[in-house]
Amino acid sequence: MTNFYLDIIFDITCFWLTHWAPPPSCCLVKKRLDRAIAIYKSAIPGAASDTFTITWHPFYLDPTLPRPRKLGRERLAPGGTLLRVIGQVDGIDFAPKGRIGPRRDAHRLLVDELFKAFLENGGDITSHRLLVSAGERIGLDKTEMEDWLEGGQGGDDVDREVREACVNKVFAVPNSTINGGIELAGAQNVQTFLGAFIRVKKSSFSVN
Image (cartoon, rainbow, N blue to C red):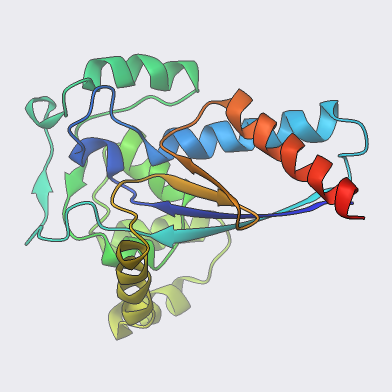
């Protein structure tokens, strides 16, 4: 059995803030990673029992954002139209209408539901109400979340991880590292993730 450990550095709002064409998207990498793991487990001999531990690490692409503001289509980065087309291929309906602002609280909470709430439903990820609602959908306790957010727990940890990423020369996201050795920058496709998983599995066999 091979144990995979993935460390992914991301920002929930990453595709809105970049200026590349097409800009990478942390939401895309999440969808593609999920598909790659499913295909790997079903198609690679002996892979069904392999385990994947995924740790999401925060990043602020624009740490200077002073306050929440509404996004509009005019704020889409160059390549945004192409990104919407790419997103549809991966089952994501990107909507440039969410509210953008400091993501510190959002990074303290959860991943999947926030990608959907912000990138597809145009939600305000600076809103504690939205964060709590998203947490409830995955079974988290409402009162505990409200106390956590209002009390500021975890905020210093988020800031520390962002600083560590910068020290390690990570300046763009998503950035994925597999088992501490294979680093993949940007929203890599399913085939790239599969190839990396196979390399790790082969190397684990050679060691054992």
